[in-house]
Length: 209
Image (cartoon, rainbow, N blue to C red; front, side, top):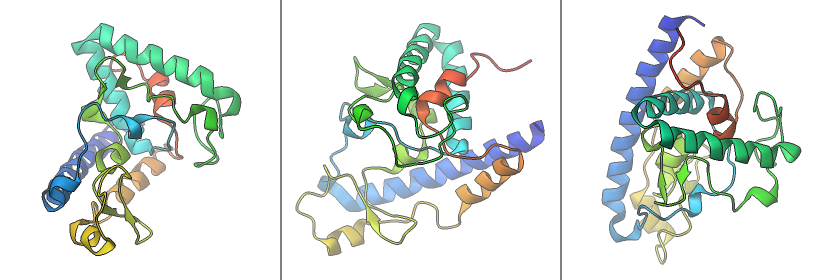
């Protein structure tokens, strides 16, 4: 894998995350008291969901960094991920070796209430918060989706009308930077959707030599 290409993609990802953070700050400002997401609210942290290879790249780096900063904590993440993969493998809608999905919405219902392996069960906080997938960064506040519809956490905006939600909504990536970065990964052979647990199980604990 060309190192320079990966470095460029990682730099682009940092810009993407900065853009998303700015958009989320704006929608949070507009939403005011309707937005009730707080640390410890983990309903959106349960069950498997599809993530991109850009998310996977970021998560692997996040776990490597945690392995250096706090090895026991990183090992707990790896252990939870291994348990998660073992539980989902018999009914995984994709390749159970690579973790690449063939069907993005065909997850087993038995996993719906199982917390993400990155979630610390004692604190209710994400152990890889700084490296979390884009879905995790944007779910909750009302956003325009790729289909031109509104998406928001069902626990927020209770009592808000559609018109009020529309006034709060933002587009998190109007310039399509994420799609551009994913195209770059695709050119490197990194393609397809996966899930958090498979990424964490396969992530090396240190940078390659």
